[in-house]
Length: 292
Image (cartoon, rainbow, N blue to C red; front, side, top):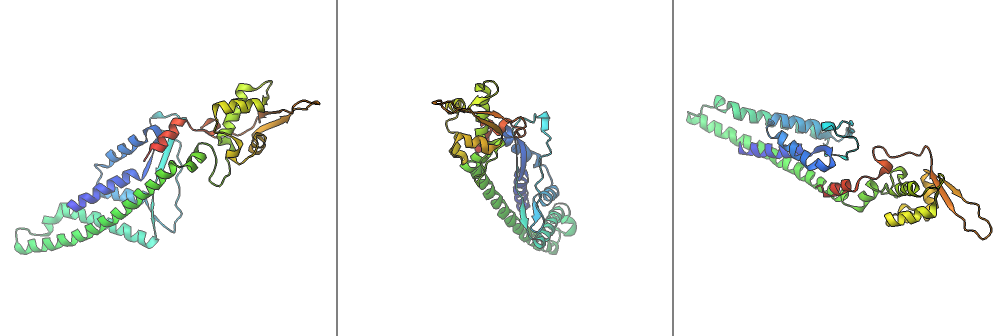
């Protein structure tokens, strides 16, 4: 029974931590609440949740269930939200065997707790001997399931560590914050440099148009790390053209005058949903990087 309790404790930790979603700033609290919620769950309920939600057959398509948009507690859609999910995949044959093995474990646990003295006469020496043999057999099966569960738990921990490492990497920062994908492509509506150009536009425009030189000066004071090279471009004009989000106008230069470039946002330019200009709040990013 002690081995069964060890199994239940580990399974509760896994079930509570393999799928978590909620406001970023309260993500750890959400995880803690999920762990508290499963403390009184029966082994049968835990196994049903585990096999139904987190075990998959390798040949089947693993469906990523999107956020349904609901926010607990009336949370605003503007509140940063995170969702993390881990699954364990195996062959269809192994999946069927695993489900049968876990169902047998639950039945065995219930039989030991509720029916042991009904099945064996412990007031009789032969009954005690038969009960002892039965318990040894049960222990072997339970121990085998514990070792298997520990293997799965270690794999989940390793996956969580890899995910945490990625969240803290420059590649994640570039993609999540600045809109720069790992292959070098840019999601322009989400990019920080487009946000910077729009902020400069709001601050420096004259008659609906913004001097590119004035915008560059404005951006260099507010965001020194933002420049064309970071986004695979050589010039600011190339950023304006490549993004497809701005109109560019080159002033007619008279003799001896300096050619000037002006820009303005296209009226139908797309904006990243739920996040103006696509840049998450810095506090959100810091919290994500702190998450384990």
